[in-house]
Length: 237
Image (tube, rainbow, N blue to C red; front, side, top):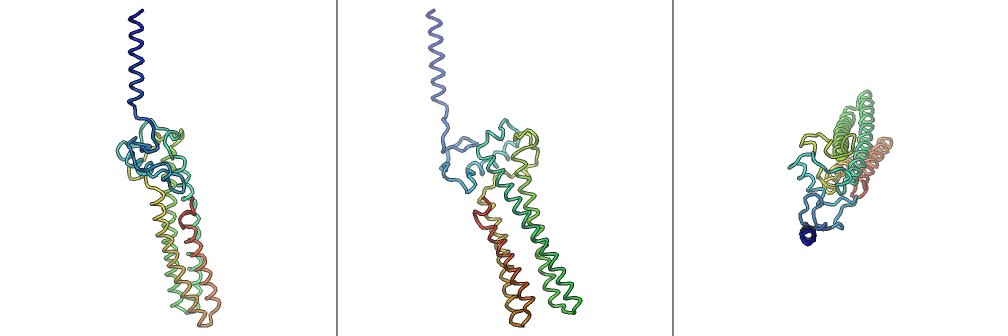
């Protein structure tokens, strides 16, 4: 009996010692690697994704691949990241549609100017059409990239990360809301440049007495300013 009690006591001591020695969950630990970080849960982006998670998960994928025991529910911030990517994908899809519409409109105006023999105005509208076509392609590509990232995080069928089978180049899941904002800022800047060009064109046509073209360019300037405002920081959260 004494021997059994001694064994039980020793086992209890070992269990308590192991529990004390194990690192306890801390808000200042990286949610993927468990390493200490200066970031706390308060240091999140507008969509609630922890920067340490967003950054280090990309490194984790690069080092270990998408295989592993972690389910979507076990990865901190995964649902928020999926939601952010899906929101950005919808926004890029809507903006791409606007650019395709503007592309068609400029082509129609260019054709009208060509029929009237105003080749300078036709060339200007063809240049605008080319700009909108490139922007539509850019936004379509961004939409697909966000959808791919959202799908990779969510996984296929079971919703587990280990079911996703993507190449490392497609598995860049670690970029954060900050990098998204940087991309959107560049696109917004292009919209503001286009808005300024349309504003100058409207002034020019107004001074020449061509109020129809002045109204058209003023409208295009408003479209570009609206698109730029939609891509402003915080508007996608």
